[in-house]
Image (cartoon, rainbow, N blue to C red; front, side):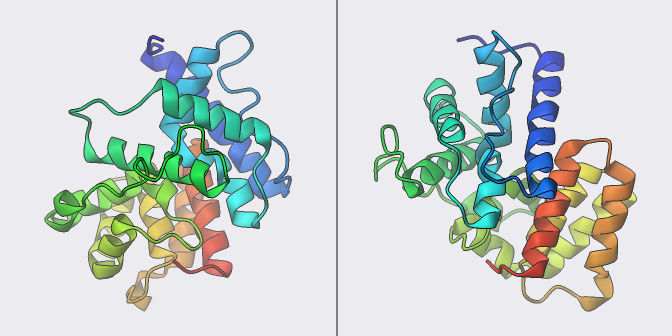
Length: 232
């Protein structure tokens, strides 16, 4: 199955993220969010969009502690099968695929999720990253930041809360709202974040300035929900 062109894929990802945000904000955590992914008759585009958003397609259910819709699990499973990471894939792609596969196994969807497939990738590349790159990579892997997560990426973030805070400020100053929102999602669950950061106000500012991108709102809303209760 070929990869859709960039503009169409971007639109499909934005639409899918909008569905996730709608479920998060509206509290309808049982409704499938993947139903309209890609639009009618374009399954390939929809699956590619799911692969980009990753396990965050299950975010409304995960944040509410409910079982995801069967339709979303089936769509996520098909995306995992259709778009496995290439042998030379970037570490973030490998980790995103791992998170999707683990989510399926956690939910009892094991047709493609064996114990071998959920073995964690390494985090050597992240442990050695300067704080700017660390923040960027964590933002890309924001989908791993959910209640109860326990993995090498989360451990790397826990060890460097001040660096992530520096990266958040840098992203805001550069008006990189998506990176700021993803970094803010991790900061919402980390101990040792400098209180002078003003994370709550910072998240609201990021949502206000970057609110035209539903992925920004998705990360900010996840961060706010995590701040309200859950801790990694």
